[in-house]
Length: 307
Image (tube, rainbow, N blue to C red; front, side):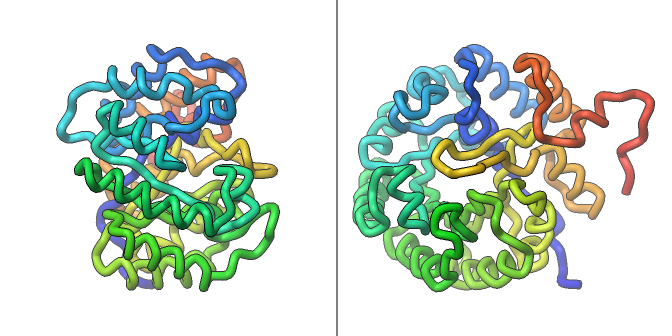
């Protein structure tokens, strides 16, 4: 077995990727309470919103208001997703110092998600990075649908690696690959992520995993084996893209943190506090969340903390 990392950094995406699929309106005050509780649970990176068309993604209509109310914490990275130059400019105006600039490896998904062909998205990506860097903002360069598309099917690994090179040439500070559809599998994850780590030449490499086909944690383990140590998660396993057929949630933050703990890998987060957040949010919605561990941790008659 390859050497696993001693510690892993988790970026909480429940506030953005997690909420964007919900039909309910989540008040800004409730979102702020989630921010405070997630920080208290030990999370250091939170993607809090996306700057997109509120008519298409109503849950993100309060992005500016939410960002202006965020706590002033030098030890916490607050970020937002942007898909076009206007989104970057809105993030700048909202005072964020870190943004995710993203495009899809799938031409079909790109047109549904950003209303651009892949070639058009590539050209605008350069402008987006330039606008962000000119204002001193840290940029995470993202590639969606990197391991398969529900519309196009297989995504060639050569295309994904070309996009990684493109992002690096544009000057991004971090590289993030997303298994947006959950179609990735461990061997493909390892092949691609090994090459991405090599191309990144020391820049942070992030993996965003969805559990659509119940392979999320298996894919995380495969990535750990080749040296990936930063992952996106969402409390309660919330998430999914409104523009991906059959999309479901991210790997749950508490499930992931517990899985890492069992292998002796530190994530710095408190599983009990995360489980309580997910449990309370399930009560708020009036239905269970996709995550698994929060349902167990809240019970006093079962054992779960095993290594």
